[in-house]
Image 1 (cartoon, rainbow, N blue to C red):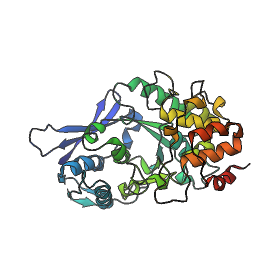
Image 2: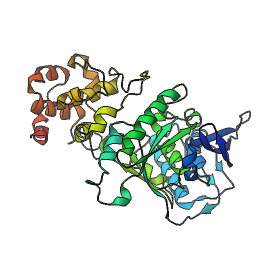
Image 3: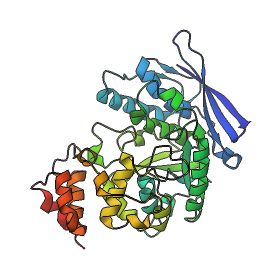
Image 4: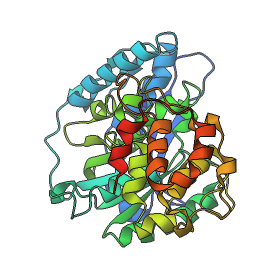
Amino acid sequence: MILTPAGTRESPGGVTLAFEVRREQPDTEPFELQFEVPAPHADFLSTGIEPALIAALFPAMATGETIRTAHPVSSRLAYGLKQIMDYFQLWFPDKLQAVPIEAPRHQDSPATGSRTTGMFFSGGVDSFYTLARHQADVESDPCLRPRYGVFVFGFDLTEGRLNEYIQLADRYEKVLQAQGMSLVRVRTNLRAMLDPAHPWLYTHGMGLASVAHALDRGFRTLLIPSTNRFSLYMPPNGSNPITDPWASSESLELLHHGCEASRINKVRAIAAWPPVREHLRVCWQETHGVLNCGACPKCLKTQLILWTLGALDHFPAFPPGFSLDQITPALIRPLNPGAYPHEQTFAEEWQALVTTLRPEAMARVNQLVPRTGRLSRWVKQFKR
C-alpha cells in the first residue's frame, strides 16, 4: 500500500486535504482520502503524511500489505502504530496481522505557538461529560480546557444525511460558543477506506486519530471522549484508553477521557446542565429533524436513566411518552464487567438508583432484572 500526499485544494465546503492511497492488489483503483474543513480553519490542515498512514492501518492489516511512503513520518507515531497493531492482532488474530511500515522518520519539536486544545464533540453523553469535566470550575489547568470542538461528517452521519449534519453543526456551534469555544466542521470519506477492512465498531478509534492528525497544525492536544468505562473494554472498542494515546506524535497528544465513569454516572453528572437538556443527541437513527427518535435502544436506555433521576420531563431533546413498558430485560441485561468482578453491572447500578430515587417502581424493576445479593453495596452511593 503506497501513500502519497495530493496536497490541498479549494472545494465547495472550503478547503480539502487529500492523499492518494494505492493498493498493491491487481485491478484496484487508487483511492483519494479526503478531509475537508471550512476556509477559516484551512490553516489547521496538516502538511504531513500521518493522516493517511493512520487511515491505512486497518486496511493493510486486513490484507497483510506493507505500508510504504517516501514522505517522512513521525518517529513517535510510527512506534505507536506498531503497538496498536500488536494489540489489535492480539484481540483479532484471525482477522488482522501486524504489517511493516516502510517510511523515513522525523522527530518534530513539541507543539508551540497558536496550537491549542480541542475535543471531539458529537452532542452525546460522552461528549457533554468530557466538556463538563473541562470547564474552568473543574479543570484548573487552562491548557487542558478545550477551545474547539471537532464535529465530523462521515462517521455516524454519512452520505445522504448531510442536511442533518449541517443542522446539528449549526446547533452545536451555538452550544460551544456559549462555553467560549468554536466548532470545527470536518468532512471525510475515510470510512470508505476502513469499512471493507474491519467493522467500524473496532476501527473508529483510528478514524478519530486520522482526523486528529489531519488537523495537527491547529491542535497540540485533542480529547477523545470515552465510549465505555475501563472495565468494559475487553474485548475493546475501536476507541479505547489503551490504543488511542499510542496514536500521538511529538506534536499532537491524543487523550482518551472519561472511562472512569459508568453511563449512569455520566448522565447523573450532566443531567442538570441546561445545554444538555436541550441539545443532547444519543440517537444514530435518521430522525428527520428531531434530535432523538426516542424508541431505539440508545434512546430508551438514556431515557430510562433520566426518568429514574426524575429529569426526563426537563429534556425537550427527547419526544414525550416514555414508559417503563418500553423497557425489556434484553435492553438492560447485565454487562460483563470484564476484569473487575466486584464492579457493578448496568443493571445493578440502575436497580440501586431506583431503590433510592424511585422505590414505587421496584415491582416493575424486579420483573425486568433479577435482584442480586450484591445490590445493597451499591445503594449507598445514591443516598442523598
